[in-house]
Figure 1 (cartoon, rainbow over the protein chains, first blue to last red):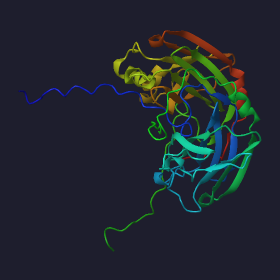
Figure 2 (figure 1 turned 60 degrees about the vertical axis):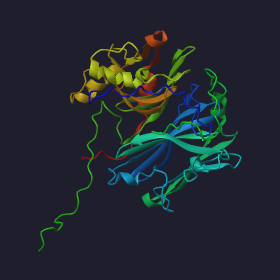
Figure 3 (figure 1 turned 135 degrees about the horizontal axis):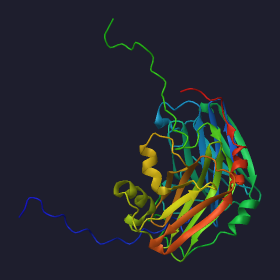
Figure 4 (figure 1 turned 90 degrees about the vertical axis):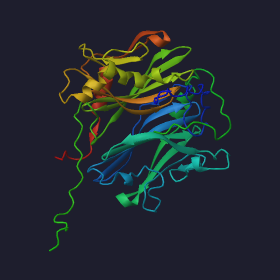
Length: 201
Length: 193
């Protein structure tokens, strides 16, 4: 027998992972409809923050938060979009409030819920992002579609000199285009709340 | 005086800026423009370009790919795009995607490796994939196009023999992008790094 034996045969291909719960990420059987919208949220001499890339799905809204800084960040671990890094009161805060009074913020971390129950809507989940020492992007999935009326985006970041600001949009255009979104083919069945595959990164 | 003493304060962090053909400027708030072009819609695959963002030096957009069945690793598009760098030929199973300006200048996803390997300013437009998320069934990728297109149509082109998708070309008017670019806003005076 040679020292270099061939590796064992690979295991048979596994069935595809089931779909994420619908509150966790946008469905992968729809093409979204984009809104040409960019919302400035805050600006100082050192930072600017805006929301952009509004992609409407039948059951929710995906959008990106962009943060740029004038001078490069010294320590990447102080990335304000990393959940849990700045738990203090002066850390980065972002959230939404809908016209029915429902609120969701970046402090919720609904994916940490361990009892298998779906979180209470509305739910705000990060689903991908990136950047470097000068700019950062995080995409959020807001589930479900906001009710008629105003949708308010709030942010605060005391450590960066950003006081709480609120910026509101009307949900009518979002709800109108959501009806145009087509389901391309049937969705995968989600096998219960927690066996889904999570697309992070 | 000891030997191990700090003699000077630490230098501020430095981060050289990307050349303008590789990335959008990071000191500009872009302006959104309407972009919603379905490039493919079949029983197995659908492709959309959407979410335009205009800058003084070019524009960005999102690319959404959906598949009914999860793909095998080897035909996931971004893997095949990178294979071109190694193989020097376009793999048969690769999704082909590119853009073309009214003056004939074009750029495709297969230029990527060359763009990043060279420090030279490209002679024509550049198409740069800059991040994204995905899995076998759904990919959402972000692209950067440099520079702003000249007047006339801007074409988005794709072809995917693996899924029997024939060459499809959809256009928007460059004026839409150029008008939005004029509304992009520089955040602070440009500084030398």
